[in-house]
Image 1 (cartoon, rainbow, N blue to C red):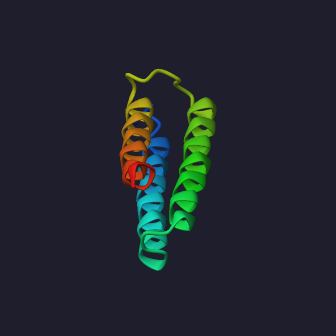
Image 2: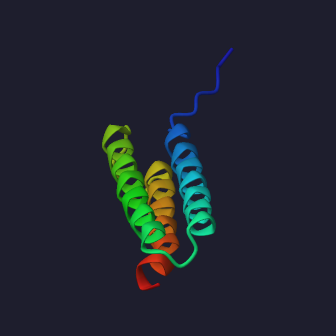
Length: 92
């Protein structure tokens, strides 16, 4: 009997989107704890740099390094969401 095999790496986009959700939650918590303070902006910038570094590392470790693949699309979507999530903290 033939077995079905799926060669698509689904772990990478799931982890990327989970990291995006965690990043958003931490930015929201920082802005709620320190409203209108520069400390919240620095926390947001540092967390974004760490999260984008993790995304870059995950992209380099994935089997397919093409942005047109499903893992690449998940990483690109999460990275774009993180950049747009930190923009209010930077613009202030």
